[in-house]
Image (cartoon, rainbow, N blue to C red; front, side):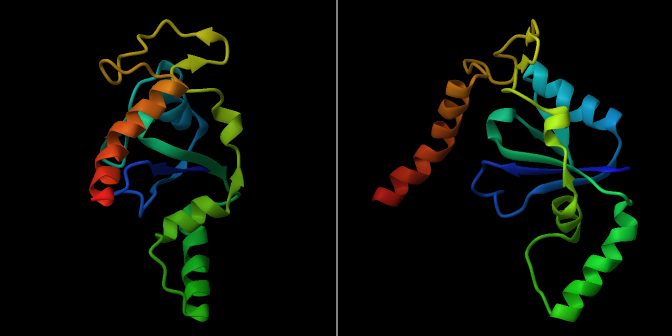
Length: 152
């Protein structure tokens, strides 16, 4: 059964559109998402390198069929209901599957379920520790300039 990944970035400019990857197997999820997350390393998805501090949400879902079989049904339903949406058709495939995120991911980036991985917690962002508090600091650096300009 195929897996689908939906990533929502924290970047306010990119937040309008999730990054969606369809029809992957468990080995791909482990190699490209789960293992780098345990090590606190950035991931490379859809032509973009993304640090965990800049990922707001990640969902991994599973469907009984590949997206190629599901997409025509989604498109037909949208036409029949005259639905216009900014979400990609692939987003609906990923969103409609069974959520299996917990099967692959747990805890915070940079820490495996067994404890310390031995990875350098600063490898992703020099001067930034990849902990929940550190993630908050990274977000503040991104969001503060927007807040200051809104206060003026």
